[in-house]
Image (cartoon, rainbow, N blue to C red; front, side, top):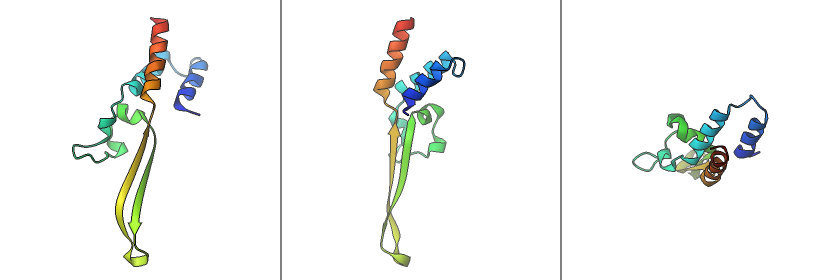
Length: 103
């Protein structure tokens, strides 16, 4: 189930998600800035240290260590961090559709 379909399902269950909260979640996704995921040197910021708005745009992540050698001579040679973000364009289009039909 995607984030957007879970939002729609939550909205269908009247009372479980307030409309203003739902719109705020969409606004956060539509205006999220992926540059906030990195520090001034270009290194990823730990997820626990991100602000709420940036953290809410993350739908998945993977952290991988790459090694060289075997046994006692095995050493870490690199780290790979993959971060999957919510689809900003889809969130913006959905937000525009909702606000356009209600305002």
